Every structure is written in structure tokens, then in C-alpha cells.
Image (cartoon, rainbow, N blue to C red):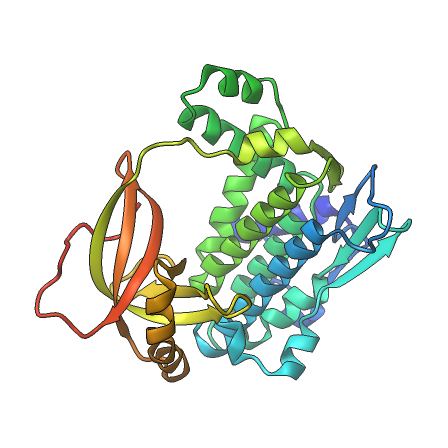
Length: 343
């Protein structure tokens, strides 16, 4: 089935979710996206000597990393891109076309998200896979998805920020309608209820949106999927309230699902609580401990074995604001803290 328009894709997705679709939902191999299924970024004031700006290069790499994690989860049950072969990673590459010097980026990922879900046919039904793939296409490429995310983040910041001046700045902005924000939440919920892969796909969308917003906050003017975002407005939407965070020590058991060694001094680790909860990206609070415990972390990653970690958890207003690894520890006889990591 070729989805010629965004509206057709949205309608199919909602019909499958409601159980109103007549007949059997299209199989993964038969889904084809039309020309609309592309993420577009236009820079009215592009830099002079750059094919892709560093800020957007970082954003596109994050989108690619998220797709790798989704594919790894479908294949191995763990969202760790290192479990993919180089050939598999090449098959999952998003295509970034640059036009007008460095002013227009056209990102195609329809085939990449289909291939990412190919291994999930062993665990999910055809309807579930179709829902995830079409949902990813609609929200990543649909003209209103990123705008609705900005509006949602704006509303969250207004509720969090105590500065009257900052609240006034945010209230002056408007990115999408209430109906679009509600539809964004509805489609994310539809996607997320389809097993671990669905939950990860919803995370792929949110992490990709956040990466694009971060890039916009470093660029004078961006137009992302037809939504203009000025640098200062993006900064205002991203700004978190400055609340004094209280540190607490927590010892708990985790699975290491990814290790980023791009910075050899400050490695970034993705850990998953053994007792349930969302994956967390954390770094070492002390680089000396990182050097000492590096081998044990990599062993836990390679063997997929649980590991006990002592974390420094900073909270403010009863919410987790920051988590860092203090050190790798042996299994304790009793927990140092019972507060847990739930925000």
C-alpha cells in the first residue's frame, strides 16, 4: 500500500487503532511512503562554508542513533546499536540530501524505519508493526508533529518556570493548536502500547524532536517541517527552571545497554534498572572512577549481565534532575537508599 499523503497515513493509523480498518492491515513489506515522508530543514541564513552545520549534523546523528537502537531492540531485545553488524547499520542509514549550498536539508528515513522493524515480525503482529512504522513516519515527517512537540514543551515550561519575564516570553509564542497537541499525544500513546518496540519508537520520536530543538537553539533561524524557529525562542522553550538539587546516594542493579566512548575521558553510559523503569544516559561523577571501572562496565555490556552501581541522584521538587555514576560496587547486603529513581 502506497501512502500518498500524510492525511491518508494518519487516517489508516487511527482506523487500525480503533479497529475500524476493513480487512487485514497491510504487511510491512507492502507499506510504501509517498514524497511527503521526509524531514525538511531550511536555514534562511546558512553559514558560508559548511555543507551541514555542526548543530544539525549532531541532530541527524542522534536520529540515526535512535533508529539503530530501535533495530537492535527488535533484533536482540536490547536497545544497543553495538549489537548490529556494519552491514545492518548501512541498511539503516537515513539519507540526508543537501540543497542550496547549506541552506536546505531533506532527510529520507522511510526505508530505514521499515528495516529497523523487520526483525520484530517474530514478536509482534502485522497490525502492531504497521502501527509503529506508520506512526514513526507520520510524526517524524508530518508537518505538524514537530510543531505540536514545541507547543507541548512551551506549555510545560510555562508551568515549571517561576520567572515572570520568562513566562511572558513563552506565552507570547505559539507553535500549534490544542487539537494538534492532543493528536500528538494520541499517536504517541497508540505507538507506545505495541510492546517494547512501540515504547522505544515513541522514545525515538521524542529524542529526535529534542535533538532538532537543540540544533535550532544553536542556529539563528531554522524552518523545520515548515515550522519557523528562532534561536532565542528555541532557547526559551529548552530552558529548565533553576532549582537547587539535593544529592542522594543510591545503590542498585542495572543492565548496561550502551557505552559511548567518543570522549575517552568522560564516557556516557546507557543503563536500564533491573527492577523496571526507563533507560538513563549517565556519565561518571569522577573520571578517576571511570578509568578504574571501565573494564567492568564493558564486560557487563558484552555479557549482558547485571551490574551493581552506586549513583549520585540529584532531586529538586521531588523530581530527579541529574544522575551520575559514582562507581561500580559489589552486590551489597542492603540498599544504601530506598528512594529509587522514579521521577
